[in-house]
Image (cartoon, rainbow, N blue to C red; front, top):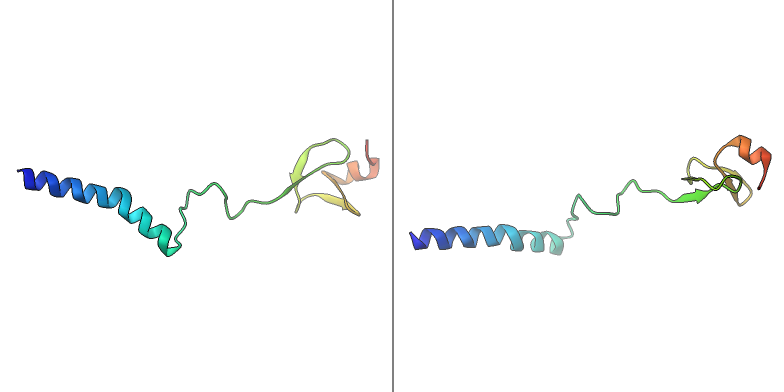
Length: 76
């Protein structure tokens, strides 16, 4: 009975500690990593201060706006 318990603990420890360590060594990332692959930079609107995705922002030179209306209104 004790052998069975020790084997169970050994298998549990292997799954708990050894497998994650081997994945890190092989370069496999944790799918729940805080830095998502789809993460994008945000920029601040020069008119109202709202943060928008850089890909969705309207630019006027090096100045970013959240909409075309705010670009036309200019900086506040």
